Length: 109
Image (cartoon, rainbow, N blue to C red; front, side, top):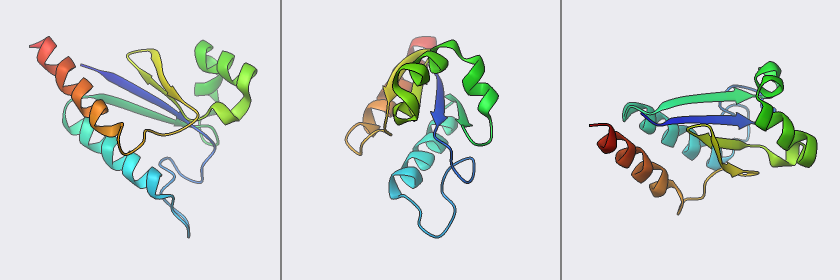
């Protein structure tokens, strides 16, 4: 099973899809993660404002933040490896996330 961990910048709620002006990229990203969960992918999200210890206890995240600051957020990990940092996946990149999940699932069978 693939594991995806996302270390988000400080947001008002766990998904960032709250408040008067919602970023459509966050809505699409949250929907994609929900679909990936439905495919058996283990997904964890950490919000800097709500879970700062998750950032402090992950050596890789801590190192990236020390070097690049919060501009490096969000940071997405796939199976413990940095996959994307400083942004959420684009519309064109999202199918690749699904393909990777499918391939990982098929390899496990």
